[in-house]
Length: 224
Image (cartoon, rainbow, N blue to C red; front, top):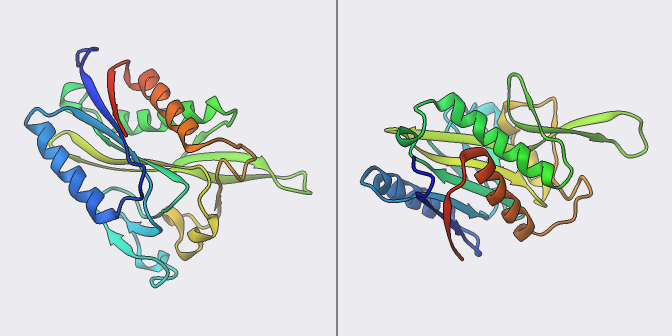
């Protein structure tokens, strides 16, 4: 793709209902197939759970706590809610590289590079989806490993949608209604829980710069 090609960079300031987000993504995917610009959409959802194509019913521990949505993205159950930055990426892999594994790797790298801006070392783990951090446990010499960011994508005719989420300061207790991503042996954390005090705007700025570093410098149009 030409380095001057524009990618729309949209930030929603109000909470976005999940069904509305799905409709917007579906519409933009169809538009990209007809020549519309690619889109990176940053938003927050009200509290909810989503089930990916690999979700197991046993991993939904409390079906009445929040709304549960079945979605076509890859992965298992995850939580979305206020204080978590969701990044939906609608990119045309036909104009980049027709390599879904590379795309997922690049999404991971996007998260890792973003976290590094704030001094947090995010890491991949074999057999576990998402990005993980090791951190000290209070009053203990032991290190704990928790998930700080999730990944779930779908691709239609080489156009991607869904994407990533990074925990800035969500209510981590909200994860207790599911087994996140089917992994029960590890917990979930956030930048706030790690002692990182930043705003959502700070995180967004880092996400934009890191996106350009990983996916290539583009011309972004930001709409608030």
